[in-house]
Image (cartoon, rainbow, N blue to C red):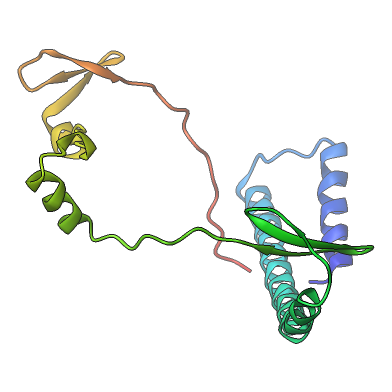
Length: 175
């Protein structure tokens, strides 16, 4: 379905709305489902089309960067740069060449580090995280109004029940 076909589909739906169209029988409901299916099909087609276009654009950017970045970096080495502790830069009319000084990367083995901190008595640098195992506890509860009670009927502190609105959707199997 071309974009103009999609627009004509929308125009048809808008026209039906203006004329007071209502769904009052299976035929009208099925027609509405087909219109939704057509709109979803068109959306999916356009998404696929633009995903391909995005891939092409990304590839072009990547190729341009691979070609020009090494040359720009080589040029950057030859010009007087403004330097600070964290970066060096050179301004041009269309942008800026920048080299950022990065701090070191720390590759940690948390188990070994944890054992070492315990061994030397630096437990103040150890985090202990406690969390309720709600998924394990929930089967032993029941809803009482807007609260939760455990299997003994005792109201559970710290849990509130918030009702959510029902969701209506359609499943279309015609395209």
